[in-house]
Structures are given as structure tokens and as C-alpha cells.
Length: 110
Length: 117
Image (cartoon, rainbow over all chains, first blue to last red; front, side, top):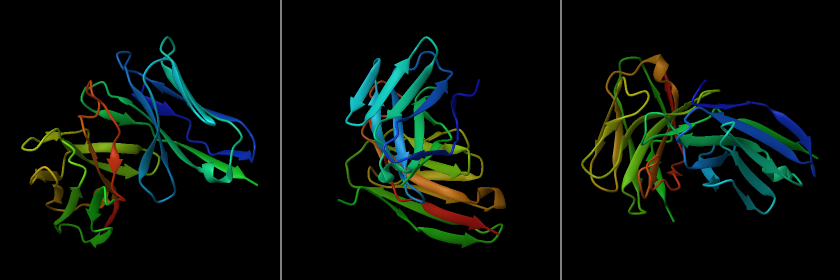
């Protein structure tokens, strides 16, 4: 299994929809997980951190399933401004490094 | 609020030429990183510096060298550029070492787009 795997998408959803992305990871010892958002031709920026079972911030919910080794990102009431690529980030197997997934592209349409 | 500043933002090189990407952060962070991003492959770590005076190889260090000039600055050098090094390069910094027990947020520069012909 790759260290971090994401469905590249794109996910095309209408405004107001709920959309969820999954990310699987291979390092069972990982304790902290992150979702970064990257707009087109811009730098990644931290969206959410996940240290225990999950985290919620407004319309965004991140959940962690340690048994199945995946984390998910749920976006409710999608806005046009949510259109971006969402990067799953976990500690790598080598230690002292973070491993980035390839990203899932979301396109929210009017 | 400069954060992480990278230069240059765009560069075109011919195969075999050398160049240095500069990075500076004003957040007093201990750790700094260089990543490259290629389509569909996510960000891959080239080199990192856990603290001033130390540097370590990341996932894809071949063809690159780095210098942690001081706490603020971390440069990436391509000694003999190859077309395979065409990519977008991101410098990042964090207070603690990413992936370690005090993992925190990574702050990225705006990226440097490098094309090697």
C-alpha cells in the first residue's frame, strides 16, 4: 500500500451539496493527520488537523478511522469558493517527515 | 506579514545550467523544508533542516544541495539542471519538526516554477 492514497477526482458537485473525500494511509503508528487546501497555482494552506477521532470546524468535518487506516473530510453546504485541491497529509514511515497525498480536486458548480 | 518568501517565482534553464532557489521566513521557525510538486504526485520532500546548522535528505534529494544559511534562510541549489527537475518548488517552515512529536502547521511560500529545457 502506498504511504498515502487519495482519489484524484475531480469531484464535480452543485452548490449546497455535501461531499466527502477519503484518504488511506499505511503507517499504523501515525498519531496526527492533516488536511491542506491548495488553490490552483497557489501554495498549500492548512485546513484542519486531526489528532484523535475527529475534528469539526464549521462546514468542515474530518474523521479518523484508525482500524481501517483512513481519514475523511466532509464538506457540508458546498460553496463555489470551496473549489480547490484537498491534500491529505500524514507522518511517513521514515519518521520526521510528512507525506502528502496526491490531492483530491473539488469543483463546485453554480 | 511576509511569512515565507521564495525567489525567483519563475525560471527557465537550459540542461546543465545551475541555479539557486532562495527561501526566507520571518516567523522565527526552527524547521525549514524544500518540496517539489509534480502533476498527480503530490508534494515530495527534497531536503529539510530540523534546526539551524543541520540538514537532512528527504525522499528525492538526488541532483540537489541545500544550505541553511541561518535560522531565517534555507536555499536549494541545482548544480546541473536536468529536464526531470522541471517542477514547482515550494519552501516551507514550521515551528517544530514536521512528522515529529510536536508536529504543527507547515507554512509554505508561493512556489517557484522551474522549467529545464
